[in-house]
Image (cartoon, rainbow, N blue to C red; front, top):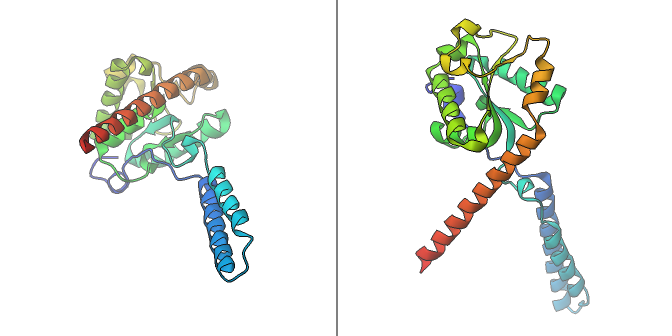
Length: 242
């Protein structure tokens, strides 16, 4: 997962999600209604009026129906967790992702390697850490050898220290395969209780860490921060126009 590797360079992290099917459907209804209104207007000009008001009403109704929730209208989604991992551990990260989502219902989550393209590494890392409630560090032999991974976990730890609502949001995890031995774990991570997937108490650990109340609190702060930034940007634009 080094900065010179193809998987990350070709597709760095960004938290923009695909537009929902409801938006596409609404757009289809609007286009269809507009076409029917145009046809009715043509008929009216040819002496076959009487349907324009009805079609215009359908067009207005379609416009009202296309309103969808913010997060379903192509806006960013606040994730429950993001897994930071070495490039060679992509398959293991995917396995952990599926287990957390399918076995424990902790969703939505993503792994770093599968984030959409479009931004620089540092901006993407900031988005990953601040656009999710928890940052999971997949501790393997590969993770320890990867300079970029070392930078990731130090950045994540500093973020959790400097932002009060991010306290305890960094979760080191030793997966079933190629787990990094405790004796070789960086000192900065030894002070944090790691998730041990091969432990009999793994399920209890997961339930204790990934609390829905914590997620909702962080999501609320994230939304307020985004809205404040949008208002500031809009205000600056108005000043520029004057």
